[in-house]
Length: 272
Image (cartoon, rainbow, N blue to C red):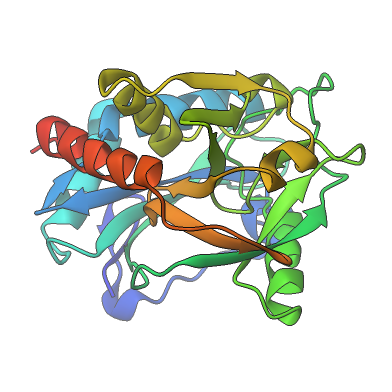
């Protein structure tokens, strides 16, 4: 496993953090994961823009952009060309400081598969309420991961997160969308969900191939009535969700068209 800490390669991928590290103690930090295609990054600058925004929201001072970019490219030279990506974890070094520790490593991706989901309420999500960290990609994923484990305990792959009032939000590690009558619908970013880079490019790809896109606030009933349901993430790209609890969905034509359009978009935009 390839790992770097503050730009220094770590032998055997074993990272030692001091007890005072606030990412370790309190999940105080942010992160990004950037996928590789044929050894090249997709949308690296967009991911780093989001990282910068997350760090600013948390009051963290990142290394300069050129340094972080160089670290990513060093990691890419030590990664397989496909089926993996580079993850950067940024932690607050100690209490009451803006100084950070940067841990960067190469992650292998699981084989693609169809998703079976169950609905889980997510009362920790802002769901449109004012919140200073809304949309930040923080290290504090414990509630999301608890929801994913709950889904797996029920015999499903992952969770559809909804608000207390039943508004569809996102999955623990992915954006959600669905097709009704050939129109693609997806929860709006104003709900405080993550501004997924994959979601962003899928919506652009949809517009390019003539699929109407509607972003908004949708109750769970609307999603359950869909013709097709999709999960969108760097790891899974455009993936069919074939079940939500007792409701089943096909791998339909909208999903197929979007998957191809996204693949074409990636091919045209990958950063060498």
